[in-house]
Length: 118
Image (spheres, rainbow, N blue to C red):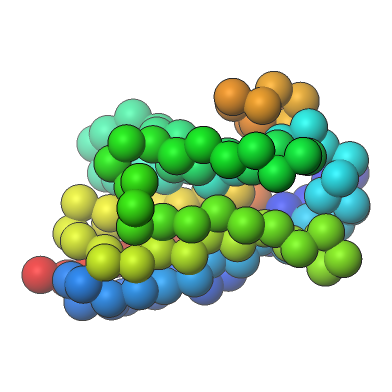
């Protein structure tokens, strides 16, 4: 049973930063890719960033230049560094992992709330 556990969410002011962590119960290398998604109230889930087993990285246009995804295979953990946050980034952020590089959504974490105040 694969488990993904997110942490690091919280309340931050506009322009602030947060770092999300996702700890996997198995080796991150066992997945073709891992990613971060988010869902704001009343909106569809959005893919924010992905990182493949070979560390190829993609970002949604809305976060390019502000967010950075990375992973530490030794710790089985994926990170999302979020800088220059704005209220539009407010959402529940989910860690996911799976087989498809462009949509690694076979396994999900429980989510962590990020709230950006204006």
